[in-house]
Length: 122
Length: 341
Image 1 (cartoon, rainbow over the protein chains, first blue to last red):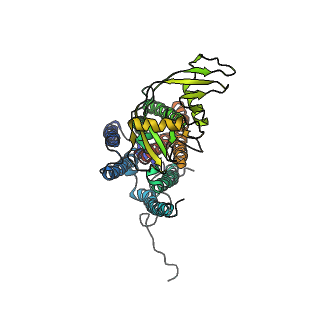
Image 2: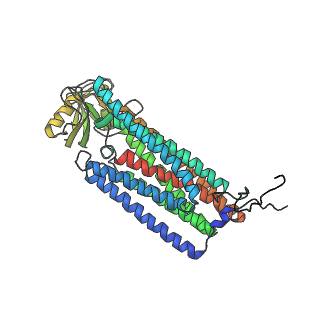
Image 3: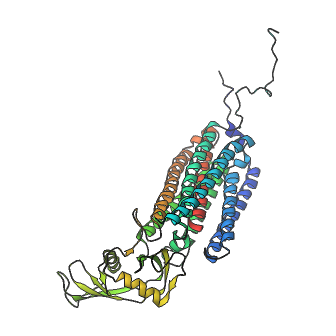
């Protein structure tokens, strides 16, 4: 008996030559963007020293640029942007909650430990 | 009311046939694996952030540590790592092009782009091997312990050693003999052991030789551990003062005043944990890249054999693609948090 409960979702993803062209164009745009961001990062890193006053801004711009790059890789290259909204949320929300908490607790504790080193002078 | 049932249509009642995510089992599980792997890497990077935040100014700065290029020498801060990042991004692009070709059932296109991806992967793994080798061997100056107990890393151009001229005979070497081989290795080994004294080197056979060495240029000492006189965060010591302090320590005849390169016990760049994090994080990522290349090769063989073409879709390429992009994604974060910041 033929089974009707097996659905080949991958067949839904097929596209024709014309759609392929526009997809490739998007891939090229993202490539250029990622390359530009990386170049800017290296230039900023080489120009501005960590001891300079502007470093705090540079550091945060690095973090923002990294998140932008990550977003493009996940949403376009990994096609998460094309998946169902429910799937996107299942992947991103638990991860984000857990990691934000871990970052917070890590940095908070590190500050305390650093103070302890200074106070007790190990 | 007994026997009364309400008829629900398929739209209201999920019958269990279709996936609510409209995606196949394999792809969903790949995503779940990637989330767990992402948590692992995040844990490592946050542990790194913890240690770094805790160590404050003693921590090495990426551009001080990684400033070499193959064939070109020193003075190119972070350029090599940027090149590695670019290679990995490009290989991610070729992978997404392979996936796109798969959606058009273009077997030739998939093959071509998969091969390009694998080559990019090999380039990256090779670059990482070079980087590790460079990190382990270290610089020509090393990290020096100054007279007051502080430790400083040293930047600048190391004057080449021309030769050692023997001034006191030993078992093998006679007075006046000029040694020209393996100079740098002998020099660093003697420096670690405390066999350098007042411009002379004490060789293994008991002979003493004068070191004929060109002058160093633009020497700079950056304090990484506070001592009695010099503190972390002090202005870098430059010029003649730096050279005097460096060679006082190096030619003191005392062992363990200088550290070259890195191992699991000590390193010339900063705190001990720095090298351990370097080895673990880049090593763990490198192993991911390596296994990614192996998986890509296996899938490429399947593509060439026509397995997926017969199946009617190239979802296997898509799934390995997800893994490969993830490896790229992790590197983007390692690049920022390990090298840039």
